[in-house]
Figure (cartoon, rainbow, N blue to C red):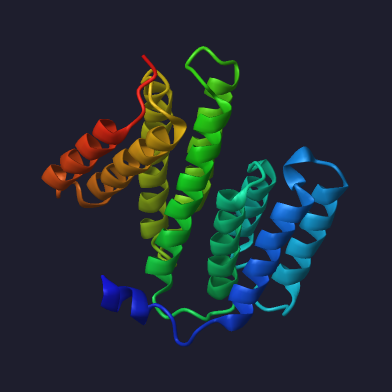
Length: 232
C-alpha cells in the first residue's frame, strides 16, 4: 500500500496542494454553508483555481461540481476544512495530470467525498424520523453515483455501460444502508465510519462479484460498534 501511494504521483504537486490549502482556509474563514456572501466568494475562488491554468477543464468537470456542492454543504470546522483541502488538491492534481495512477487517486477522491458527505449527513440528521433523512440519503447516493461512474477511467463503451450499472447498484445500496444506519443509536462519527466501511465492502463485491476480505470487514465493523457512544 505504501508503494502504491508513492507511485500515484509523478512529483509532489505543490500547485495543487497550495490551491487546495487556500480553499480549505477560505472554507473555514468564509463559512460558505450559510449561502451568504461567503459562499459567493468561495465559489469564485474555486472556479478561478479550477480554470487557471486552463487545461482540460471538461475532463473533471463533474467531480469538480460535486466537490463544490459538497463543500458548500459542509458545516464550518477543522474537519470540514481538512476535507476541502484534500478533495480539491486531489481534484486539481487529477485535472492537471500530476498523478500517474489516476484510477487509484480518483478512488481516494471518491471515498473521501463519500466519508465527508456521510459525516455531514449523520451530523445533520439526528434520527430516522427527521424530515432530512430520505433527502440526505438520496443526496449521498446521487453523489456516489455521479462520481463512481468514472472510476474505471476508460474510454471503451462497454466498460462505461458496465461501470454505470455498477455505480447505480452501489448507489442504491448506499441509500438503503444510510437509512438503516439512522436506526442505530450511536454517535454520528461512528455512523459515518460504519457507512464508509459497508460501502467499501459493497463496491469490492460489485466489482469482483466475490465476498473478498469479509472477515476483515466484519472485524472493522465490530470495532466500530464496540467503541461507539451508544445513546440508549
